[in-house]
Length: 199
Image 1 (cartoon, one colour):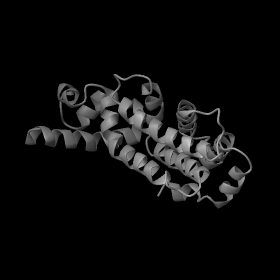
Image 2 (cartoon, one colour; image 1 turned 30 degrees about the vertical axis):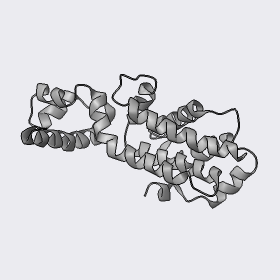
Image 3 (cartoon, one colour; image 1 turned 120 degrees about the vertical axis):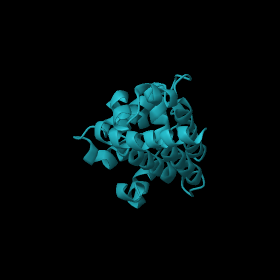
């Protein structure tokens, strides 16, 4: 990428992050271009779709999220790992207004710019679930698609102001349905708070 093109790219990302923080996923591409002092055609050369722009905006955060899943795979207790994973996901969702709905829609669309990010999250979830199932800590009738669906539903729900304060409580309810036996309640008592997960 030429130096001037790289400068434009970085500037667009910086401006887009501010606009999206204000307006969420419904931020206007035209408004982003205007506030960046660029023509819409220039913006679209870098990001031909809204999804492509969001993929660039959340790329670093998604990489950190999937790295966290790698760390959770070696947790001594696989049920703890699943609870922590859901809390990490919710912390991510709370910082990216509206992007979870876009990811859920892109989940089965290989042409989407967000498809690769969805696949990474899906794969990480499935690995954590499989480990818990292998050790008898999670229901055998849940699969990776179910996990991603439940995570997406929770992410969408806590995007609503009336449900955001109950995010951790909702995580506990959903994960208790996934985790097998009384161990899930014991884990909830020992897990860090939602504020810890968002750090």
